[in-house]
Image (spheres, one colour):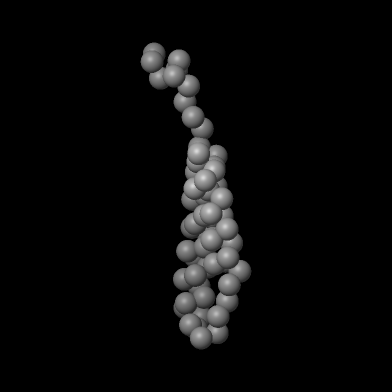
Length: 59
């Protein structure tokens, strides 16, 4: 289930990292790249989150 959230975040993040537009200037490009990296890292964090088994949580 968590991959349903991680995969679109990876795709959107990589799109924003690779996208450049001269109309928005340097600040806009930097902001889009920062947002892209944040989405990419959140997707990695969601995808790598470990599940705790019920046996360990009941102790």
